[in-house]
Image (cartoon, rainbow, N blue to C red; front, top):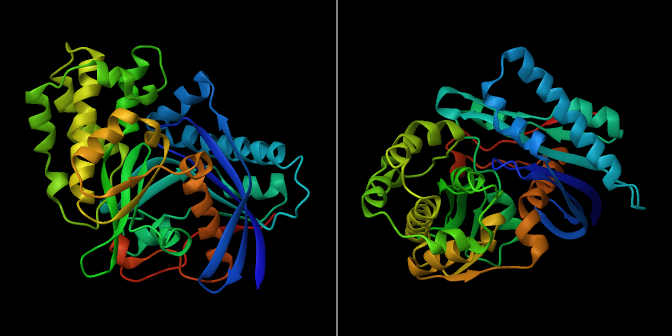
Length: 352
């Protein structure tokens, strides 16, 4: 039995912070078990958060500077994180932070230069997991389903509530399918920031508001929700398809907008889940009671909220696992999920 200690890094589209987790993986081939050793989130201060949320507006040269800057930020976080760790670390697997995701035009971009991470930590680093699949005609997303199958296979579906909601699940034929469902925190947090809050704790603000029927109807009519997988979402889609609708309701209160968004998102997620058995829910949205209640109201499945480590670090754990598969030469990106021409072993390896 082989054993690897791997650090996984994840920075979500809601730009809350950098999740860092160290896991021990034991097994071989596609049969692995994981044990979390340490996990920590390096929260972005207000200046860094603002920088992360405006990356898509930068010039090409400034964006490259940001790529190197975030590589250094990630490396510094790793070096601080491992100060009290006795175990040898075999690999870093970094998702980076998504700036652009437009697979239909053949590109996606996550900053956080893996060469910088590898050189500054002296640990081999796998990064840029999505571009290889996009080059094969795939969506480059979602990438976590192979981890859902191999690490969290006791659940019938795995739902992540982060910047966007995405799900991997068994369909009626017993095949694994996965796709992005809807925006979540990427849009809801814009409204909470108007009140000086980073997010709506427990969904209390949303719960205090009222649903706006005409807005709910317009959001529900968005064509993406009726599109069949493979499909994925990005910031560009939100700005093109959702924000023009929301702009029509600029005079409404934050509470009413958050209520309507939560009802809408809960309904779309509930419809996507349907009746599929046990559903593991992770990501920051798992703490949003009002949103979870709306999801439960719209589906016929058992919604399971796990321990805090799984809620907060499941995606970082799975990217650590994707890095493991990469260095073992195993396919870590499934064409049945992304729509690519074939399965592939994705990720760029930089030597420390």
